[in-house]
Image (cartoon, rainbow, N blue to C red; front, side):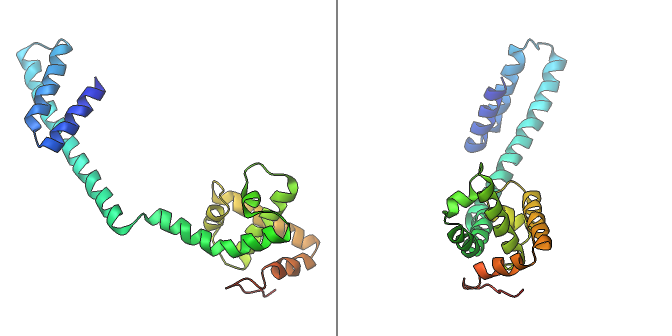
Length: 182
């Protein structure tokens, strides 16, 4: 019955025919066995409120969608900018490890690939000064904690072997828009 009700609201909104939707709601009530006058009057009030609220919701949703269409999808634009910002670092790391960027970002990956991705995350944080959330978006990970873990792993390796920092910064020294200070 819910599908019929939503269909009636949709038709009422687009035909501006509130009475048709209310009549439909009443018929649903009668089909369910509501026959007393008092129950009918209550159903009329509830149906009017339901139709009014549903129409407001549809209008509000249409306004929001129209506003998004006018200004463009901010989330998609943000993700595009993040990926463009991270591209030189990801390409430099992938080139160093002789793999494609797609292989660097794959979900299930061997230890060598995940180590390279961790280094890319550290470089994005160190060189591009990206947030953990932006790093997760750039490396196609689910959330910022994955990026935090990757950066922490590389930091631990740098503590063990301090020259690693210079090696990693040397990977991206020639890429555009990057500082290679250590």
